[in-house]
Amino acid sequence: MNPLRDLQTDFQSFLLRGDERMLTRVTGSEKVSATRRLAIYYDAYRLRLLEALDSNYPVLHVWMGDEEFEKLGLAYLETHPSSHFSIRYFGHRLAEYLAQAGNYRDQPWLGEMAALEWAMSEAFDAADDHAVNPDDLATVPPQAWPDMRLMLHASVHRLDLRWNVAAIWNAIKQERAPEEPRGEEWPQSWLVWRQDLRIFFRSLSVDEAWAIDAVRAHESFASVCEGLCEWIDAPNVALHAAGLMKQWITDGIVSKIDLSGQ
Image (cartoon, one colour):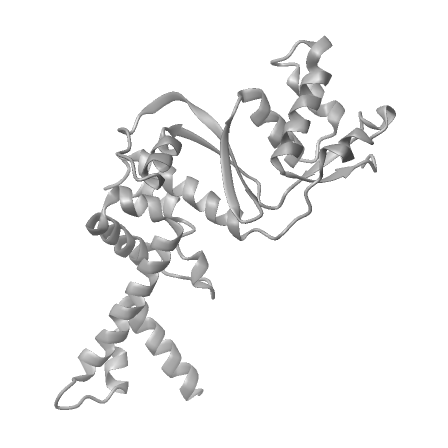
């Protein structure tokens, strides 16, 4: 028997599921009943989690409105109670929930907005990392290029979005009226990253998205060039790949140039 552990377990069960066993452990008074005392904690816990959701999804909150966002938050809490010791990670499955829950499945743009904002949040919280500068690439000897590999900044995230949520995000952040949700036949690839304390994101062409994914998989420059031949003529592919890499370095998303050949 561990009385403190049992008390903590009962209190947690009450906060998460409203388990009434905790009522027997609380003493009420003439002014405040045991039920009311526990309700204060029950409500405060949910309000704090809703605040955490708002912190991670501020634009989604504005887009949906206070009432609908609160409904979403409480419904999400019922199916995905906080399971991490840090409240920061409450909400990490919100995009998944929005894509699957019956009352949100017919609004797929909401899930994509959540995915975009979570990627931004993850990028912001990523570890500080070194950023290669353009002069570093210029020092790579020609014979080392085929086996050269790039390591991307810890903040880099890739996602594919079918809906125009990036444009809607920009409009809401600039306090402009957002356009109506509009879906495309094919998803658009996006890159999200951080420079210093600023978050950036931009769309990617099909070939650049593939190349980014190949670099993240630790493919060599030669392998990247080979794969890019699906879109670029062979005589021009090396120059095109080098141009992409220079752009990534300019964007600040390359943390290391690996010449070990492994």
